[in-house]
Amino acid sequence: MAKSRSGTRGRRGPRKPMRRDAVAQGAAAVLDPRDRGAIELPSSITVKDLADLLGVNPADVIRELIKSGIFANINQGIDRETASLVAEELGYEVAETAAPGATVNADGSAPETAPVSAATKEQLYEEDEESLLQPRAPIVTVMGHVDHGKTSLLDAIRTTKVAAGERGGITQHIGASEVVKDGRHIVFLDTPGHEAFTAMRARGAKVTDIAVVVVAADDGVMPQTLEAIDHARAAKVPIIIALNKIDKPDANADRVKNGLAEAGVVVEEYGGDVPMVPVSAKARLGLDELLEMINLVADLQELKANPKRPAIGTIVEAELDKGRGPVATALVQTGTLRVGDVIVVGETYGKVRALENALGKRITKAGPSSPAVVLGLADVPEAGDILRVVADEKTARAMVEERKAASAARSEGSGRATLEDLYAQIQAGQTKELRIILKTDVSGSLGAITHALQQLSTDEVRINVLHEAAGDVTDNDIMLAAASDAIVVAFNTKVTDTARRAAESEKVDVRLYDIIYKLTDDISAALRGMLEPEQVETVEGRAEVRQIFKVGKVAVIAGCYVTDGRIVRSGGARVWRGGKVITTDRIESLRRFRDDVREVATNFECGIGLAGSNDLVEGDVIECFTQQMVSRAAG
Image (cartoon, rainbow, N blue to C red):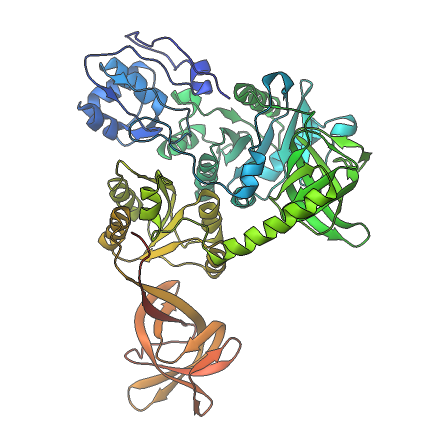
């Protein structure tokens, strides 16, 4: 855990880059009281918003930034540390706040802890005595945009710094690998990226200590880069930027730094608290520096565990092996896992029959921050399930039965944050923050909607937009919402088929809007507990237009093939062409050959006639939907 720094920062005059040791620790300074009242500062703020908050001209803020060697424009975002220095220079006292990434109430106090899943509660076991804790290796996840070099960087690190002996090795199948730098171990999780990272969080597992976000110097900040950053922030995990491909002739580090700053990630060189390390996976440049930075950030977190207690860990991946039965890769987080231990993992249990390390060699035990293959479970667990050593098989059996019963009960209720039950949660003191994933059709809408939503924050609950982007709602958005207990708000954009199924499975509340004031009215009404009955839309299915038949002079019948769900007569119809909705209508007639039918299922052909639209062409997709009024449960 980062240590707080005491003392004052009352010096005036030019400052060169901010004190790196303090910024890296992310500590909140204790400031001298000034004539003006103490002000609250968010984790990041634009120059203009800071000027408005202080009641000064933006030019005054920019002038103070230049004194510190930071050249920022009026719309550029700066982190809290930098903003607090500027506020102090202008004569303000800045209220002390929690460490970066922590949520703070409007009154500056720490919020109540949000309800966590049973799996997470098990991981948050009773605290061990300080004397029993020993330093452990950091667990690192590498994320970033596609083709920016995540896999190449991991391969380069493994090849250069392979852990020797029983504790280390290169592996492409165990789900985690281990390297050594200056005699210290670092564990890298082999995940496909932030999707898997967040999927594990959705199951209650908080495995990662540090997130390394890879950004290509010749490509810059891309959509998946921003997604990775938002996922790491939502998990409150320290970020290190690995600026890859610096050996390329068209590499432009400044463009990357400016792009990150616009996203609210201010690197240390610009006075922020996010380290950036230039690397080249291909040329093997900067690898030592990256590992050193990982160790530095790990030191600031003071990662410790008690190796003498019963083990608690997380399943990274699992499969059913024909010869060996259920096989799971576990990452031990605290305690020591031994052969012969009775373990409970999710909704299954067993006795550890054998353990293997990353090299495939048999071992008798695995300590904190050690990946190990576990044999002996009765069934295949799921990735993200929590592993826990228990006293005996009778205890394990009782725990699994209790969990299965609890799981069945949860499946009857949503278990997730919904707009309907928001007001009841506020009244019960359970909710201090409404987390939102925002997706829009175009990027121009993001700023306006985000600003409008943040204006709705109240003393009881503040609105936190965890991730915002243009485009369709994807299953990745759903997993982030599930992991963060957030709702998804989509404006003038659609939900992909896989995302729709994921939302139903994870019971994530997805809200679709095409009018901004309707969106803000719903959120505002939910905060007041005055939600009106809503019209809920259900997408029944989709059909592709294969042929057009003219009936009479004007009317047309579309010969279609149902690709998903079902088509219902008298249902609503949206016609998609080129990824855009060209018209919304009603299905007036539905036929199978010569027969009128009520509905047509997937993989069958049919003829569809719309009530008022005849402008159909081959290749169009007709989306069938139904609507019904549903009373709200809030208040």
